[in-house]
Image 1 (tube, rainbow, N blue to C red):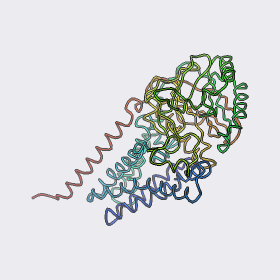
Image 2 (image 1 turned 90 degrees about the vertical axis):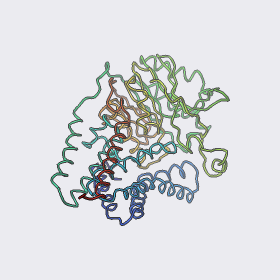
Image 3 (image 1 turned 120 degrees about the vertical axis):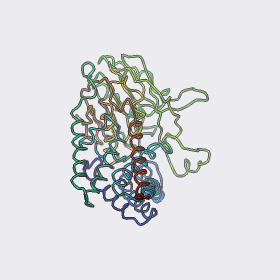
Length: 483
């Protein structure tokens, strides 16, 4: 856990994973290896996603005992993935070098990748994020993305274990050093090119407490807060957070929107705001959207990757009790936006938009590239309270910047609102839990990193190749020498 934000001790995951590999190697059976992986996962996810309790209890209205149980069960489910890695490693019984230099890291990566899409995916705490943005291994992100960095981190852990157990220590140490020097060297390469002059931006943080955000009597106060922030914003590109306006678009006074648009036009640019939207498509649908007003024609981005039990209820007809008796989610019936949407043409830039949790899915973000010159994410991390989740979320946004070679603009309700450069470094941000406006500049970029071109294909091909080689070595050891 210490490798992830807010701790950022990027060497720690390498050492702890090396320890897990040691337990797997020493396990007398596949079941024992699976148990070791499960217990490791319980500790890892129990510490890393404990904020789920905050979302369920503090803001979801769930009873404390039920929220504790639900959080524990969720962590237990996530722990099944490292448990499966340990169990599957039992198939590679002979050949230590093959097992730990090839099979163990490959199995770890594959279970992480599956976790990132199964049941709509939960890619939180993917190992590669622990290396963003300061680790030398982060230099590989523009080539192979977060999963590639995750694999290289796991390979490093396997090599460290081989050094610990003895035998060819000079060789394994040299491979680790070469791997990390390679990452440092890649960090010196500029994968994308600046496009035009920097654009001035204003990222607004309304700091509206989640427990009052959707109260009807508080709506006018929220509208006033953002109106005042907008009127004092000099940015050509002004961005408000996810659902900053706590009314459906159809219910917002037209003169209010026109006043926002007028301010954006007076700055020579555009304003983006998060808002729930009803669209009469078919029988009608609700969307978590970002809309624009200002100098450019009005445009809309509709969130594609929704959060289960947060923005929609899976198999809703079968779980009415969950909605009415246990969870108290203000908006739980959203529909998905179109899978492929164009960047928003605003403020002289083309902005690849994402809403909240969507920036955890790197291969989905690159659908709007290479056309987009900037990345932007609007979030309402007030759901996480004062937990470690907001720093973790920002770290994922930093990885998106690294993967694409683009600035990332983050406008959030309670933090962490920040400007992140193309190297994944936070150039400026405002404190959490304060009413604030971040005024700065962002540079647009063009061009494609290798990850933008390949997505996760390259790292998956390489991972399966590692497993095939390890399996062949394993089979040859079992046959033994022939006469």
